[in-house]
Length: 145
Image 1 (cartoon, rainbow, N blue to C red):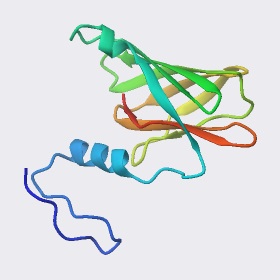
Image 2 (image 1 turned 30 degrees about the vertical axis):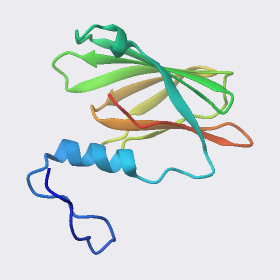
Image 3 (image 1 turned 45 degrees about the horizontal axis):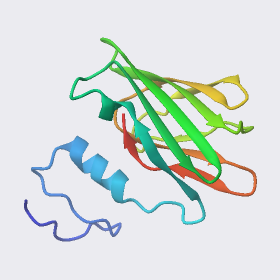
């Protein structure tokens, strides 16, 4: 793998031209600085690990941290190039979560009931979820959906 050398005027490292855009975007997301004041909710379960190599149209990810249990169910919308997702947080929180998708269009967030949201028009790629839990902010690890 070629070494990354030099920096851009903004102080970011230059990415070699032969690195695909999706790989470069995922790498930037994975290594970007997180909110140091936020509590990290770590991935504890990923249904993709249970699929024995088979790709499923639905995936469930569970994160835990900061006193929250976050469940994200993602579905591929065949032929649409977008995903839909259901998000549930226990204990329920008021206010909408932030969905950090970097340089992609933000999904629509619809309240279903306290602690549950529907995410529509989510484009595939790296993302993380951020919650205001009153006295603390909780964010998930970066994931690729």
